[in-house]
Image 1 (cartoon, helix red, strand yellow):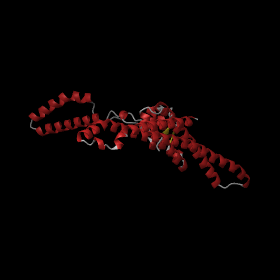
Image 2 (tube, helix red, strand yellow; image 1 turned 90 degrees about the vertical axis):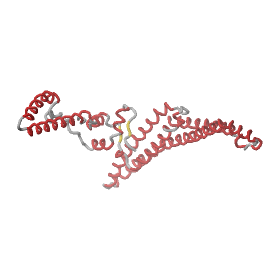
Image 3 (cartoon, one colour; image 1 turned 45 degrees about the horizontal axis):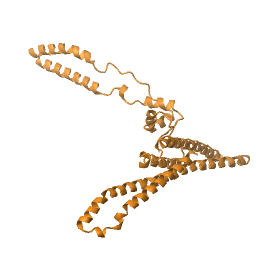
Image 4 (cartoon, helix red, strand yellow; image 1 turned 90 degrees about the horizontal axis):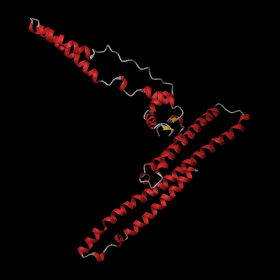
Length: 295
């Protein structure tokens, strides 16, 4: 189910939060990233120092190679090449400043605290209900009829994420209250308190039923969209067959079999009209279900 983010959070921040669920759990548990260390300047010679030392090293190496201790010249050459290779390798490394930093996630998580929800915010019953809502929303947003603008794609893009967040927020609150209620019951209830517990339990049950009703409304909307999607694809296939119909008719005429034309081929135009009406009815039903969601 992943991280659920308030649609009011900027998209780039929302993407960062969704991509770092394990890290957000650690932050929630109290983890703090270490302070950023300043890059050390003593790890390897600087490029400027190497450049300045190059003429001196070359001159000294030439002297050594011309002397009786040529072996020392080769040693000096090897050492210098080794240092240069280390410097090149350090230049190719990605510096700490360019790596994705855990502190960025930490700071955004603190800034937008309360505007995202993690898997651990939901009990098992709530997770099941939330995943039902997410499946319904995803099927609508991924549909071709939505992408083609046959539905109100702009309103879908705004309202459906808002519905997901509101459902998730209510389920998280419900999960927390249910946990507290179970812990209270586990400690034992005095007879004097039993009368108060019953209406609280009814409140939990009624609240869950209200959230489930929202999810069922989303599922009905998704079902209407699925009907429209099937009609959309069937209509496209019929239109493709209609475009090929003149070639079939030509073949039948040339082969002398036009009098034996299959009736189903001639009904293609009628089928296309029926599917067009079916698609319109399905889209209309989806619009009506969407208006019900708006309440």
